[in-house]
Length: 220
Image (cartoon, rainbow, N blue to C red; front, side, top):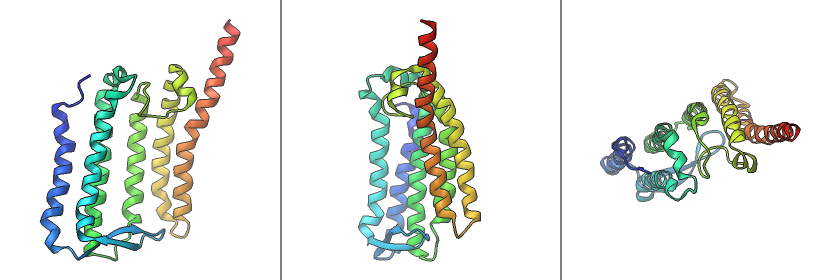
């Protein structure tokens, strides 16, 4: 299976861009860089400039290598060719998310009054929506997608779960962004939406597995 193609130049350029921006801005940055934000979106922990500038791009590079090469050890690696293009965009999207988070962190080092919630919630909302578009195209494998005992057991359950899960993630992504309209409760709403979005397809996979099994037993 061909993993590395010419398309990989896009995520690679994004990662290189992160390192370049970090190096070019290094001398302009303060001695400490934000490393954590509290529930109110305020900075509550700091790291050294060296750690702050180089850690996140390095982690992004590691994530890229992991999700790019991991299909090579998947027992069902042949199925990746059936969703190669969606998987490429899925990986690129993840890299873009981490690169933007890195740029935001550098910006926050210079402007400490920034509230990360106004970045992270819209970013997660877009991420979930795009994952929802991606999920129905994913074919059965051991690393990517909604993996439960029932989806792994049955290709039909896998396909139905990912079709349903795609809709859940799209709806969840759209609902999550509206949590910002309720400043006092946005965190609770956001977490509830994310949990429901993630758990609903898992529960669905169990019930669709039971339904298919009952139908099969009747036929026999």
